[in-house]
Length: 163
Image 1 (cartoon, rainbow, N blue to C red):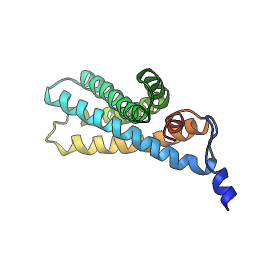
Image 2 (cartoon, rainbow, N blue to C red):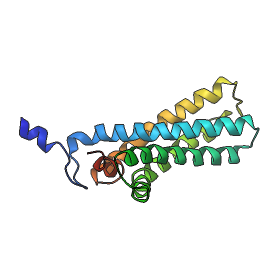
Image 3 (tube, rainbow, N blue to C red):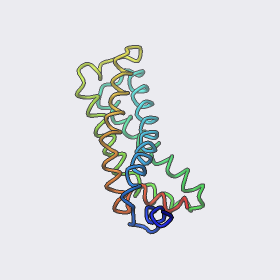
């Protein structure tokens, strides 16, 4: 039994255990979702409150999602003792594909949902579609993170610096 538990733990970059990758993928995606949601909501709220059209609002939301996604990873790896230059490299390697997929999906849902881009902040449609879009993005990004972690990429890179 001890040997099985030991075998299920990844020890080296690129070495990921099949028994732990879904759990790691969910954890990585929740991490990504946190940063993306902060940036996405903030960008949508700012753009909508300022009366911006769809494109500038989406651009702001995407830029802020990447910013907050990277910032959360940077915070963790800097706290683990990595220097700034190395921490930036880790954050870029760990999060870029995950954030890109999440942003493509959640913004795609928002753009394709009838009336969502025209909804005001006081309109429940604005908040419901944003929540649904982020939930769909989580579901579709989790397998991407599982695939990356299984190859020693994505949050597997961050995980190396937390142990």
